Length: 263
Image (cartoon, rainbow, N blue to C red):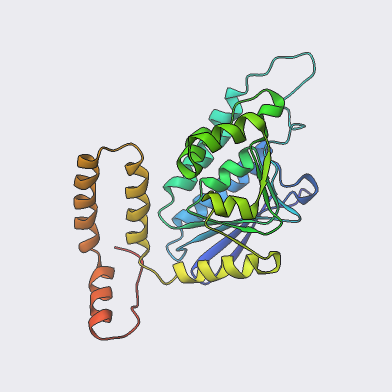
C-alpha cells in the first residue's frame, strides 16, 4: 500500500500539511502534487481552519522535481511546459489565493521548485540548517513555479539574477539577512515557532487577513492610484465584517477580542 504523500495534522483552528517522501527529500511527483492540492483545497473549504502550516518530513523540505518521475527519458525530448501547466502553476496559484495565512516551515534543503513553493507562502521560517537553491541552471532550465517573479521582489534584481545564473545555494541566515524569508530559528525550535504562528492565526480575523493578502498581491502590479482605490474598497469590505466591530469593542473594553474569522 502506498503511503500518504502528504500528511494532515488537524489542530485547533489550523492544519499542518507535511510533504511525506523523506527518502527522496520530498521531491515532487505527479501523485504528491495531486495529494498536496487536495489537502490545500480541503483546508480552504473547512470553515474551522484559519491557517495552514506547510513543511517536509525528514531532513529536507523539498528538493524540487523528482527527475525519475517520467519527466525525462533518454533519447526523447520532453515538453516540460506540460507538468508546469498541470501541476506547478496551479499549486502556486492555490497557495497565493488561499483565504488564510500560509506558513512555510523549511526544515532542510529547499531547491528548485521546492524553494519557490516556499516563497509562494505568506510567511517563511527556516531552520538554521536549511538552505535555499535555484538549481535550474545546473540542468539548463529556467526557474519556474514563480521563481523569476518572487526572487526579484524579495531580494532585488541583482541578487536574484546571480542566484539563478550561478545556481548557488544560500544558508538560512543569509536568506533571513537578505529578506528572502521572515526569520531563521534553531532547528529544534522550527516547529514550535510554526505552531505558535498557526495558533496565533487561528484566533485572528481571518477574512481581514485574506484582504491583506489580496492587497499586497495587487500592489505588485498596480499603480499608486489603483492601489489607493483598492485599499478604499477593501477597507469598506473589512469594515462591514463583524470582526471589526468585535475588535473595536474589545479595544474599548480593554479585553482580548473573540474573532470569528468569517463574515
